[in-house]
Image (cartoon, rainbow, N blue to C red; front, side, top):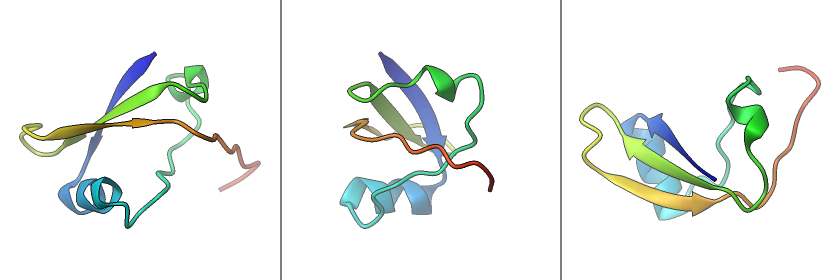
Length: 65
């Protein structure tokens, strides 16, 4: 499965270059469907004119924020 997520320029660039390895999101209904091996297409805000694809290698769920 492929899902699309939007990122602000700073986070987009850090993940794309490998400086940032994790993206923390609330574990909402949309994200509960993600599985290891699925892909995420990150799109750069505000124009969504740049994107890249990553594969999910691990999912961690924390009991509280």
